[in-house]
Structure formats: structure tokens, C-alpha cells
Image 1: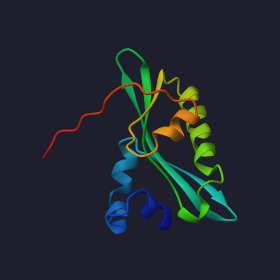
Image 2: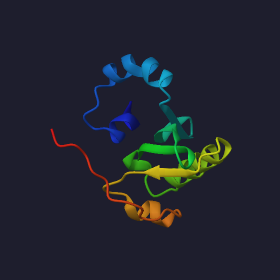
Image 3: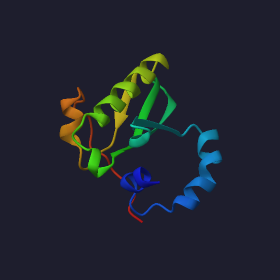
Image 4: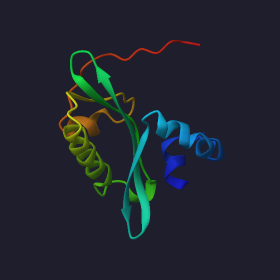
Length: 120
């Protein structure tokens, strides 16, 4: 729960757990990195069809517990996600980010597009 809170500070854990079965059925996946028996970093992703790329992986979120940051856990998770994307024949591995652009660039990602969201 602590890493999920780092991922989404306002997340209602009970509600998330209640939706877990539906999320997984719809293709939502969580990947975690453990150290000394505790989860220190987590990522969520989906793989979906794409008209040109065949398939693409979208990384929804990545977070590392504050006391474990800077130790390479997120880079290890990102490498694992890349391996999964390749094994699933994804033509693209895509991420939207507001605060971690430099992290992704250091790990081989390039700026691709401007994200837009429908205002409520």
C-alpha cells in the first residue's frame, strides 16, 4: 500500500483493490521491484493493439518509495518493461509524464508528442 500511495497519493486503496479484478481482466498490469522482501518500486502498464505499430505498451505510472529513490529501482523496472514489450511484439513503448522526463530520456526515451487531455 505504501508504494501505491507513492504512485497515486489520493488513491483509495480499498476501492483500487475492489476494482483489481476488472482492471486485470481489461489488461491492466502491475510490475514491482522488491528489495529485502519489501516492494520498493512499482509500475502499471497495458498492452493494446495499434493500427500501425501492431501492438503498443503504455506505461501508466511508475513510482519508487521515497526512501528507496536513487538506487536504480525504477531503471530496473523500466528495463523489465522493455523486455516485456519486446516479447509481446510491441512496436512502441509509450509513456506520458509530467515530472520524470529526464529519467525517461536517460533511459533511452525521446520526446515524441504533446499530450492533451479533455478538460472537465
